Image 1 (cartoon, rainbow, N blue to C red):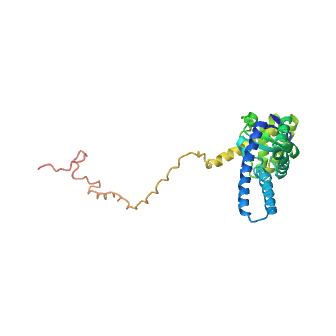
Image 2 (cartoon, rainbow, N blue to C red):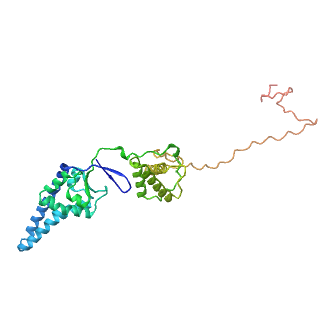
Image 3 (cartoon, rainbow, N blue to C red):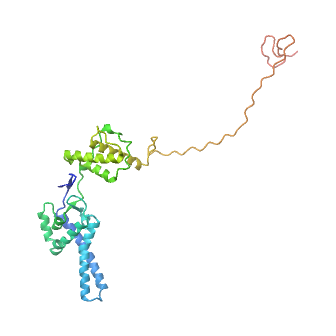
Length: 314
């Protein structure tokens, strides 16, 4: 394992590729390049049969340079250090600081590789790789690059500690829409590598990142909250919002995103107005009797009990 320290004092654990895997990747790349070179040469010989010898020689030299030299350079530049052989072996070319390579790195590696790989059949490259502590050949030394392995075992270095429980929901009202993605990436990388940094350097980085996040959100960092805890809490709040948005957006009333929608009830039919029921009217009062009292109905016996409605026989 090779530890490279970047400009932000972050130690990168890179596993350099050794000679067997690199040799296999180079052989695969050379096999593909030679196959393409032979196919292009045959096609040019058929197409330029009517030209003179000088023109055919010039075309053959140009084909050699373009296919066997320019081809690998273009492939490494476009794939950011992953040629066909390196992809098959799980390798990648990176800078000394762990960053992706560019055209100038690929150009230097390709030009030096013509001498140490093509002209000497790889002898110089093998000797240089065996002597180097990180398995670098001369092209890597001049270009400032390193071939590393991408398929490495899982490591717990990327574990991000959760925020303190007393900060749960503390920053739910912050406006995080103005924080750019590169700043979020820097916060995630800092939290993942926080345990590997020097305490003073790590605290300074946390203060700077917290100040940048607070400047984007418009709310200052609370004085009682440490910068690392503030960054962890704000990042957790952003992840919670992204999760709610990814699940379809639960409603503000607390509806779960997995709730089954219920079909609305059909609208009720308007009631047909009906006539009000007739109000029973009281019978008119009986006229007063000649004696001044109320007239007793005929079917009411003298003992004031109501009659049965039947007249007794005579």
